[in-house]
Image (cartoon, rainbow, N blue to C red):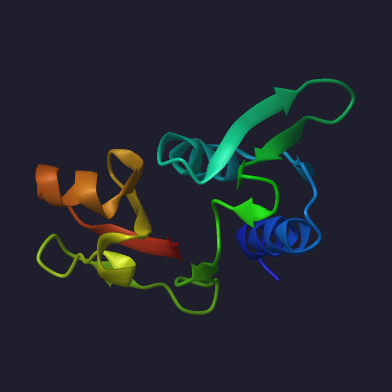
Length: 128
């Protein structure tokens, strides 16, 4: 399993049991994806813990008491199959209620920013 898929699985499992935080091994790719999720309001905060092994601590966001801000994460590109989209092929998941995260030449960004800058890239995941 890829490290990105593993991260999404751990976050989904934590939401299923109403955990407040998730601890993950650090990587720049994971950190950048989590920063985009934080900017878009799907998670509360991502913290880098330094020490013997760098860790990412993700504070999950809930509305009221049990309603999570993040409902589903769908992995699009996998190590065995990479999906690339140009600027005309970009879309907005769930009729605009979700986001599509891309890896582009300008870094990890949402499809909304990529469409505005007229660039494409590798589709990483859909989140809603």
